[in-house]
Length: 88
Length: 337
Image (cartoon, rainbow over all chains, first blue to last red; front, side, top):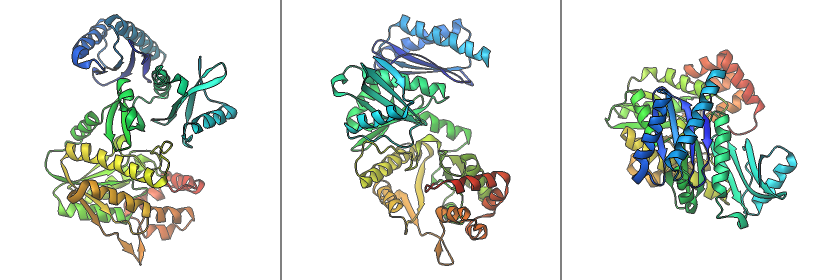
């Protein structure tokens, strides 16, 4: 199955790639990683928990997105990911 | 402003001319190109060749407007659609901060150019490889071979290295652009290395690339391209492979015939110093053993000539159905690889 990519690399946005994985893995690249890396990770983790996803890799290329932007992008990515999963 | 894929030949010609105004050339191995237009005028472009993003250019009056973000977003989405989630950018040193801000990680930097990656990290990939093959932290020797296909010359190199060290790592170039597919190449090496219990055969992963794949579009002189390619390759090996696997010696064969490969060895010597061991090449009936000679013979239907230079494992493969397919593919090709 292919990965799903949602969002953009514009300032204040983020680009989220979600792919099937043998465990749960979250990778974050961010210019504000020092200050907000942990927070971004917990935002992602919470959404993944809500959707009960345990075998995916979420790769977030952040460009200073606010929490709700990350949430919205991730939820869209998950929904498309599930759709693709059902099709295949 | 419109973003679209370049499909028509006339569009491709327009992109070539656009790149020319930046002294950039449109590379021949490109699979896909996108362009951004405004009122019919091209203002930006980017291309991909498998997992390498290249030939990025933005009209001067549109620079500083985040066009790179736009191009990269589009390119990453197209790559994901093709199932590629790990990608590379070669760029000039001064552009590194820009690509870093877009979430790419620098792997190596020379005086002129830098290699960055997205969607993966070399360090975690190598740690994983080390774990998968249960490799310990003792001192090791290493060889890196494409083995296209494996010859008695390669085996001579492997044998010499394993004799002098407790543990030898044999990296087979993973890049799948050679006539002999990666899977076949590594399987032959594994079979042939069974007799050396202290040798471990590993894939090189995507990080050690051949000269053919190395982007040349922003470097002008052939000699400079050669040197930069060698530098990127050697520094990647030194900074990551040698550190992760505790490699203390790298063995290579000397290059008496190919001036290009010899230059590569010279660059290696400069960076690896006493960690590099160059051994004399093996001769057979006064002829140097080389994979390119073997390919030439196979191409010209001189099977028995080719077999003289090959170990049994390679011959077995060539006799199989897969082997016949590879030889057929070889006959259709006219490039060096």
